[in-house]
Image (cartoon, rainbow, N blue to C red; front, side):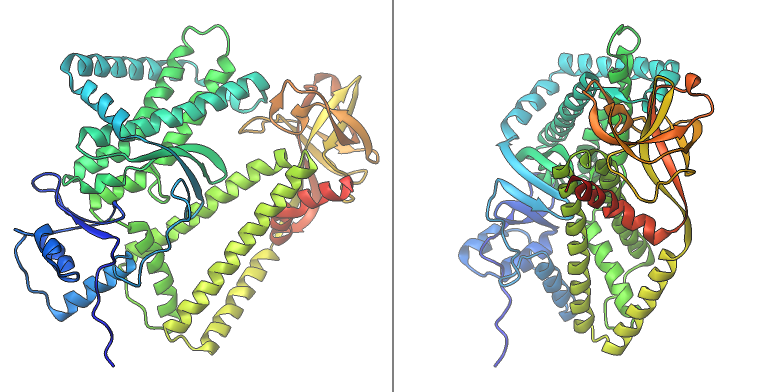
Length: 530
C-alpha cells in the first residue's frame, strides 16, 4: 500500500506579493511561515489542487522540478509545519503563548492601526525634518554629556541604588521597551507591513514588551527588513542619549539618570547580538535572506554530533555549526546571568528561596528533556547503542574531570560597621564560616563590587538586624533579620559603614561552586527558616 500523496495543511494560505519584487508568502493562520519565489508558490499550489488555489498563483508560470528538488522542498515544508500531518501544535490560548527558549508572551492589542497613524504622520515632510533634527541634536548632546560625566556614570555602578531611584529606573526601562517596540511597528507600517500582535512578556526571567513584526517577511527589499529589525535598537540609543543629555542640567535624580543610561545602553547592545532571537539576529536573517537561521544552526550542531558518532545526518557548513554553538552558548549565558543576579534578592525571603529552587529544577528538567530528544535523534540516525554509551561515558568523565578541578571556594554576603564593631552579614548561618576565615570587603553596587578592605571572622554567628544595602544593592528600606559574624577589621573608622563581602572558604572545586551557586544558598535559607 503506497503512502498518501503529500498535501498542504488546511491552515496554509499562499499570499501574493504586496509589491513588485516582493516574495510570495506561505502563511499558517495568517502568520508568515515561509518566503518563496513564484516557482515554489506554484509547487505549493500543486499540493492542494483546486480552482481556488490555481487562482492564487495565476501568472506565476509553471516550472519543472527534479526529483531531488521536489524531495528537498517537501522536507522543508514538513519542517516548517506546512504539510498535512506535520502541523505544529497550536497554543491553547492565542493571547498567552510560550516561545522557545525562554519567552512567555501575553498579547494585549493589535498594533496595526496606531503604527499606521504614526507612519503616515512621519511621511509629512515638515514632521520628518523636525524629527530628524531633534534626533541628531539629542545624539550629539548625549554623546558629549556621556563623555563629560563618564566618571559619575561609572561610580553609580559600584554603589547601591536608593529605592525611589530603582523604581524610577525600572519604570523608565519598561517604558523604553514599549517605545522600542513602537519603533519596530512604525517602521514596518512605513514599509507596507502589518505589525499585528503587541503586548508584554517574560523574557529570560525579565519583564519586557514585544511587537510581532513577522509580517516583515513580506517585504521584498532586504534593506527594508533589516531597517525594521534595527529600528528598535536605534530608538533605544536615542533614549540613552536623551537621558545622558538630561545629566547636563538635572540637579536631582542624577543616580537614576546615570543608571538608566547604563541599563538602556546595555539593552541596546544586547539586542544587537545575533546569537539570540533579538533584533541583531533578525537583521542578520534579513541581510542573508535566510529565515529560521537560528533553528537551522542549532539543528546543524545536533547533526554534526550525530555524524561524529557515526550516524546518518545531513552535513552543514562549518560556519552554520559554529553559529549554532554560539546560539546555544549565549542563551545559556543569559539564563545563567539572570539566575545569578536574581538569587541574592530571592533568598532574602523563604518564598523567594523556593522560587529559586523551582527555577533550578526547571533548568534540570530542560536538560533531561534535551537528552531524551537527542537519544531519540540518535536512534533515528542509526547510531549504535554502544557508540552512544561510550560517548556518554567519555562526556561524563570529562565533566567530572572539570568539576573536580580546584577552585577557591567563596561565598558572597555583606558587612556592616556599627559603633566601631564590624560584622559579616549573611541571610543564614553557614557552618563553613569559622573564626579565622578571611573576608574581602567591597562596595555592593548594582553591577560592580569595588574593593575596600580586608578582615577576618573573629567569632561565631549571632542574629542581628542588618541594613538591606548589606545584602542587596538597594537602600531606603527597613533593616532585615540576618545573621552576623564578628569581624576583626584593621581600621573600622575609615571603612564605609555598609557594603558587600566575599568570604574565602579555602580549597574547593568547580563542581562544588556550581552546586552551591545553583541551590546551596536557597537550601540553607529554607533550612534556617525551618
